[in-house]
Length: 244
Image (cartoon, rainbow, N blue to C red):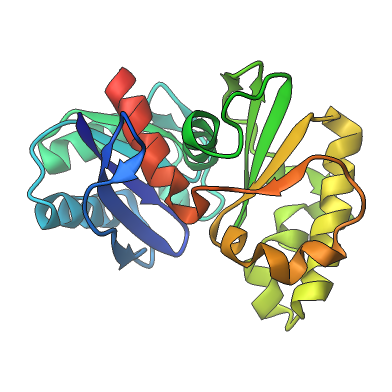
């Protein structure tokens, strides 16, 4: 069974059809830059372009960088504030003419990693942290998702954690991979004190560069890079849409 998964991020919106039995993309991933400003109408137009690109006619799974409850967007850290209170199911459904499932972006990536990636078969407390424009989080207890944790917005060193350790600040603050890795390490140690996770999976685009900063991480046990890398959101969106 194939489902189109679309991953909406602060800098790019990407998608591909997914074989939900294997987690494999069945076509090359297609990406469009996130519009500025990223208003509901502008983002819905990009999602529609992706649907047309793949000539898709079936169910659609979409991630979103926000707290999402029953399809409604409640926060907007890395998209336009006009999203707050918007029914994402409705706006994407009306724009594409398709049945849409909307969920938090890190939650989707976590679902994919738990099914096909680094979290496969793992019980206990498992956490996925995505490092990109911001920091996303997905928390699982014995394989069950605790949705919308958004731990990138924890207060940390006098500000939100993602303003200190998100991947975009490596470039903005002109940090080496080692220097940025030290920031990630401090954040991971904070998370470890709060949650004592059995496994922490580091996701987002930087998972492909894990070897460049991993030597800066201290001896926190059970920290591993994501297996699906930055395709996890697409795969997870499709998986959740296939179940609902």
